[in-house]
Length: 105
Image (tube, rainbow, N blue to C red; front, side, top):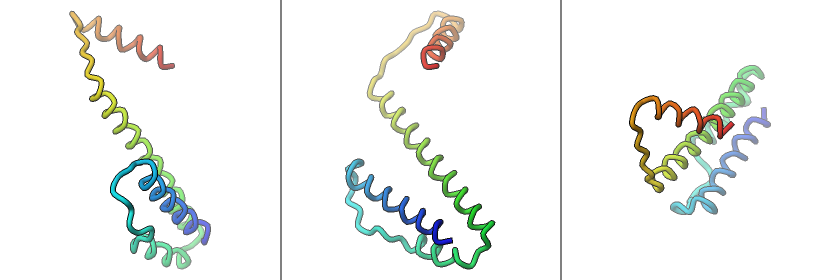
């Protein structure tokens, strides 16, 4: 059970390290969080099955957050490059979309 708590703490430390060093946002004041400490204290009371569920759920949330940040980055990049495309009809639009998908693959 300590493995899940250790994993949570490691992810928190990595998040704060990223925020402080790469995101250049407001400086991170505290590494500890009362919610995380409460979760960590509760973990020993849970069954191994529940701990596994928590580990899987935190992995799911981390992946979801990673995808969201990537999406936000793509949106910001698209806004920074305001290229306009003009199509004469819907067939040209569909053809352009299909070609861009085939280029990405």
